[in-house]
Amino acid sequence: MLLIRCPYCEEERPELEFRNAGEAHIARSANMAGESDDDFEKFFFIRSNPKGIIYERWRHMHGCARFFNAVRDTVTDRFVMTYKAGEPKPSKLPGVGK
Amino acid sequence: MKKYSVFAIAREAMRGHKGWEEQWSSPEPRKEYDVIIVGAGGHGLATAYYLATVHGITNVAVLEKGWLGGGNTGRNTTIIRSNYLYDESAGIYDHALKLWDGLSQELNYNVMYSARGVMMLAHNVHDVQVLKRHVHANRLNGIDNEWLTPEQAKEFCPPLNTSRDARYPVVGAALQRRGGTARHDAVAWGYARGASARGVHIIQNCEVTGVKRAANGAVLGVDTTRGFIGAKKVGVVAAGHSSVIMNMAGVRMPLESYPLQALVSEPVKPVVPCVVMSNTVHAYISQSDKGELVIGAGTDQYVSYSQTGGLHILQHTLDAICEMFPIFTRMKMLRSWGGIVDVTPDRSPILAKTPVPGLYVNCGWGTGGFKATPGSGHVFAHTIAKDDPHPINAPFTIERFRTGRLIDEAAAAAVAH
Image 1 (tube, each protein chain N blue to C red):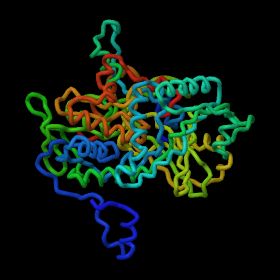
Image 2 (image 1 turned 180 degrees about the vertical axis):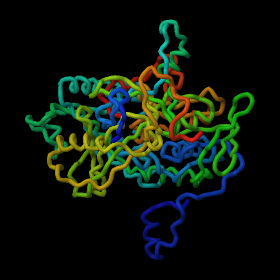
Image 3 (image 1 turned 30 degrees about the vertical axis):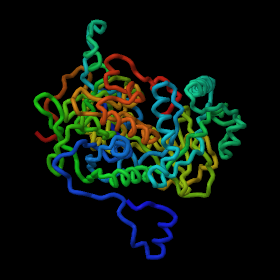
Image 4 (image 1 turned 60 degrees about the vertical axis):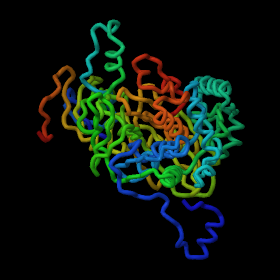
């Protein structure tokens, strides 16, 4: 089971308290009805599914119930960091080469 | 290829078993092939086998980064059934089921296909409605499926707890008698042996690291840990790593990869005569011919390539198993493991041409690809050989996620995947 640090509660808590909410930083169009089929497919279905560093959303379901973002390595399942929703995608990752 | 038979066993018994030959050869890769298949699991090897036997294309290499059948082919719970809701799914899964029947004879290799029946339990009114809908839909598609009362379910599987006092009482079940199990390793080995005997090269410990494309976009071949290997046609059958390989060719996929776990108990005498599945309490179980109870758990909730999973997922499944079969509460579990499954948004596979000329993909089988192995290989070989899909896999395109013509087995949620 993963241990996940909620950036709002500022505590590391067991995975059972959280719900994964998929890839992060996928912007929803302000004009959804005007989206082309191609763009809608990219937004709704296409995922990067990386083997390595992933940016993903979690929700602290059985805690503060808030959404936040996390950076995790999908090979080791080790969390690099978590950060609050709305904060920009971190350009430098602590403890990751380059 | 020397044929396996009772006479071969007798002959080898007389001479100390010195005459058995290797089941498949391990040749050095050529510079170029007509077709490269990426991934030597069941689906990839079946594709190579049918390319050779049905389409006469034998200048084929199957590249495998690890060892043959060491991925999800050797990690699944070996369940075979075709009781899917939609016509497209029924088409492809029943195509496979028809090939399972007779596969051992076709391959001259005992894949131990056992049509012992797959029974799916209903625990509430919703389950009853959904499963009965499946029974009717399946029958309209010519697929056997029948409704059982709790008493009939108990008769078919005596250790099942059908008490009305159970936390989730069994109120009925849907039974597909043609469903069952097969020996998963033997499926990979049998296809590998048959393909190798017809000239297909199976190259293990050879990881694909890049896909090379010409200026016009067409595939030229693949970079591997053993150098560049050319081919005008490349079929990607890489399960959990399909999107990784497709990314090398510049194609982004509607896939996410999750860990899926399974476990087996200590071996015991025959006690579970069929496959029992329950989607509501989320567990399924069968018994291998060795006597182990084979139990399938769910996926973890996050994308991962770790080939492991959380212990709480297994605990949740075992809770459900003990609920359905109280006699197993003191059974000891021997081993658990995880595999990485590639899941599409509609939970149906993709077997199709891609936007890249000469690149084909067979992926997205999610948590239930083993049952489809023969059918998947058969129609994918057709797709590659003819550069055009077989009518059975024609609906399973990548483009369906743009056009909206989904095959939404995910929403038909009575079916565990």
